[in-house]
Image (cartoon, rainbow, N blue to C red; front, side, top):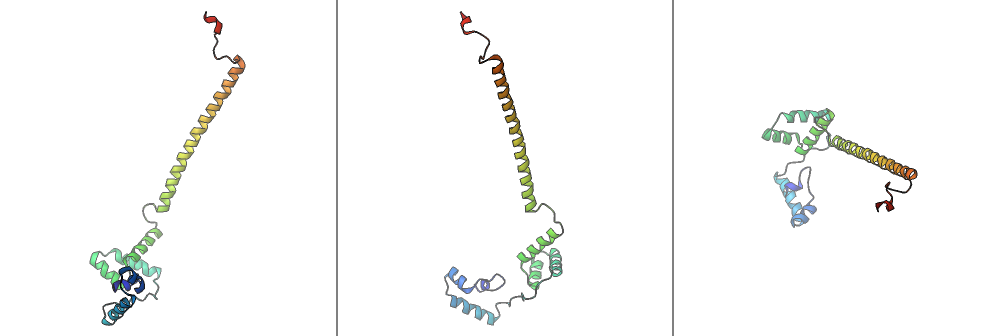
Length: 158
């Protein structure tokens, strides 16, 4: 629990106390004692902002390491794996990373959907024009031949 109250993603003693059911005063006392015994490492100086060049250097160095070596490197430099991953993503995007970005993927999906909808509208426009033409022809036929649908007389069946 002391470890959860230390570090860059530290939880307050009050919040942790609510979560685990231990009094805040007890947790604060544990944290104080752990600091005096030397169990808790002093946090890395966050006041020193990392420059772009420094982040790039760290990303390049970390890309050559694996496993325990990478863990030791991260501890020595005072950075977290999540930070390193974020920096790697930023470097990849800045250098024109491979593969489509999520926004590009969404755009291509939208373009595909738009083309499909445009084809459907064109098809329906053609069908509507054809139906309108048939109605016009049907009206002209009625005008020319009158109201009769066939050319036989009703009385001629005898």
